[in-house]
Image 1 (cartoon, rainbow, N blue to C red):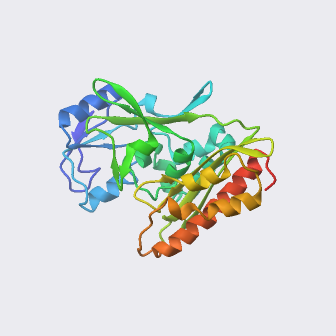
Image 2 (cartoon, rainbow, N blue to C red):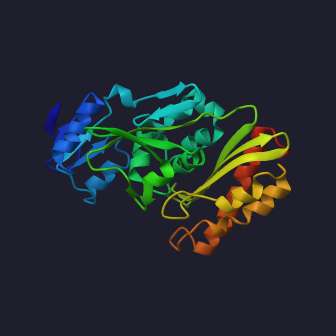
Image 3 (cartoon, rainbow, N blue to C red):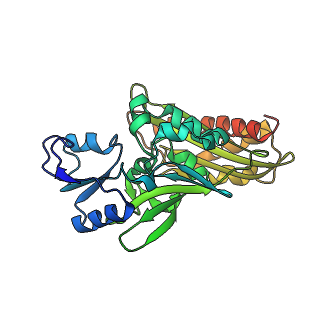
Amino acid sequence: MTERAGDVAGETEAEYYRPESVAAACRRLRDADGRARVVAGGQTLMPLVRQGLVDADAFVDVSAVPALSGVSVDGDRATVGATTTYAGLGRHDLSDRVAALDEACSVVADRQVRSLGTVGGAVAHGDPTFDLLAPLRALDAEVRLAGPDDRRCVPLGEFLVGHLRTDRREHELVTGVTFDRLDPDRTGSAYERHAAAGSGRATAGVAAVVTLADDTVERVRVACSAVADTPVRAHAVENDLVGGPATAEAVTAASERVPEDIDPIDDEAGSAAYKRRLAATLVERSLLSALGRAGGSP
């Protein structure tokens, strides 16, 4: 489908395409030579277009591409399609088993954004304050991309290269994210955040995924959002916990090391010093919840 996009982008006179396959969408992106924008839910992109902050000659609406929607599990690997909404992901059985995903999806903005905003949109935009990115980072998620001639899979930590900057090439389309399923018998996860007053945007967010072997922490991933240019792993915290006891005391001590891996800035949401203290508190809370869900003493 091709039509003018004045009704989509306010006064913008842009072409509007609604392909029904990934291949067709990629061809449209190639033909536009960097002057097209991908849209699905439009909850992030279209407000920017209407404010004149984003310009485009064409919009490629991928909301009608069946291959991009839904959640699938193949063996030990789960895949979330790019046009899956926050609400859709939150309702899926996968989120019942991965509490961090459910908790992140449930606090995103408001009901409209949760119903229309998409996983692929959050990943492709690369805003470090977006709630879903920290859980995906803690899950070691990979981003699936398709171009006119090939497909590739990039770890999320490498895909997000800076503030609102990603590794997506101009002819590529984010088709989804994929990550390993968690062992429900000994792995727990959690997401905690604090939102800036009146905005709903995270001042800091933390996701934790913990795997236990008896009473020992076998594996842990902690990811922090809104406190650096991209969601970052709290490696110092992780290193303190791995191989140690799964206790609240160990978590409290390790959480104090999170400032070593984050780089917050002073802004209207608070000072950098405040955000460091906040991040340490959220790390402790998320780890304690994850440990409890994994069967640990907290």
